[in-house]
Image (cartoon, rainbow, N blue to C red; front, side, top):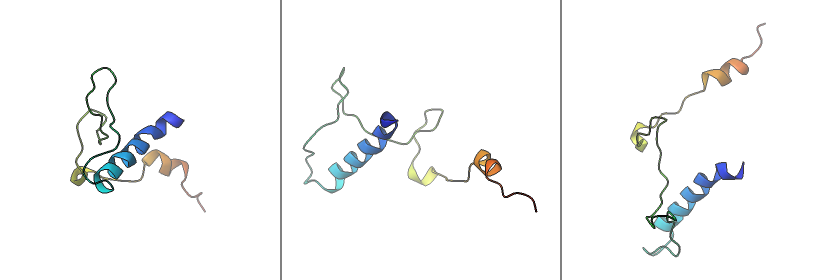
Length: 72
């Protein structure tokens, strides 16, 4: 369960580096094997990067079926 929260924590860390620092982040997030910087981004199930203007939120149909009000 804790690992599922890691992307949210890293996203907040990334946000803080951008908006709360003086242009130089005190810590770097790096891929261990390559040393390349690591960032959080939104991707679709097929792997496409999703820009904010292309993000849509809707009610999950399965959730709606499970939580439908009983017939009167």
